[in-house]
Image 1 (tube, rainbow, N blue to C red):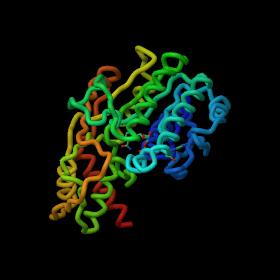
Image 2: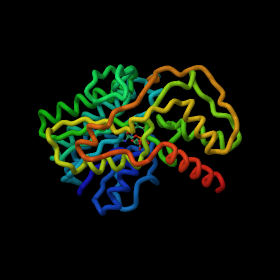
Image 3: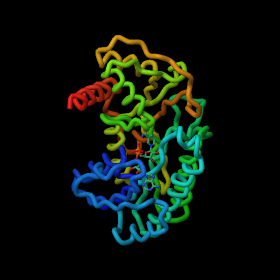
Length: 311
Ligand SMILES: NC(=O)c1ccc[n+]([C@@H]2O[C@H](COP(=O)([O-])OP(=O)(O)OC[C@H]3O[C@@H](n4cnc5c(N)ncnc54)[C@H](O)[C@@H]3O)[C@@H](O)[C@H]2O)c1
């Protein structure tokens, strides 16, 4: 396959790029390096340092194409920064999305996969939340992802570009960036291994659907090639297991061999209270199910962090 990956120098995009490279696919990465790093780009992938809002993006797609798949992972994903500067979030995540869709459509891409988020649900009323519920995002980041989906649907139905939106839960891996939604795992682990107490903001009963990045990569590979029943599709990519920050801290304390109790501080604004998503639609469509249990994934995080801190 020929794949154009935006955001391929970031946490999730670089691992998707690596998986495609491992299969021998041709991968072109577009990334501005605003949060990503060039060292994350896998060996053998072509790297183009470019902003997704660049009007010349369509030239990049035409010159390096044709592409079977455009995988759109570039975004500003810091929910808290977006609260402070919603305009910067909208600029990168909405105008950037429109430019990527336009370039993909004009460049004749086979399909586009969009990294959306559980943030589109806001404070949902149904748990585990299925895709069909009404989405009322409660943060600028959630609004920009929802708007991205609506533009994706528009291009799919009107511009001959099949689009699949993947609503990820909270994605973690061995080295989740601290600024990530699952950065709490990295921060807690580092603190515990250096003898410090984890700090929980709010009562710790806020919940997340933590999904391992390896499962996210597999979902991308599956939807990137599976036959599509309609030009527009949206899927949750999640475990269906709800974990509170309190329980997360408890598990990490035990895995780190510590005996402390977390410290509690004032809650941060803009956070959804509960998130757990129903991924049965994705299972029915492409046979995807998460393979990595949270305990198993967290044990790997603690082990890798311990190893890295030793040197
Ligand atoms: N990490 C999560 O838990 C999570 C959950 C749901 C959705 N997502 C979405 O998945 C995607 C990847 O997230 P991630 O965690 O890998 O984030 P990341 O910050 O590690 O990667 C994003 C990449 O996009 C690049 N980028 C940002 N703005 C750009 C622009 N204007 N032009 C070109 N490149 C730009 C960055 O340099 C970075 O390399 C994002 O769209 C994010 O919103 C992530």
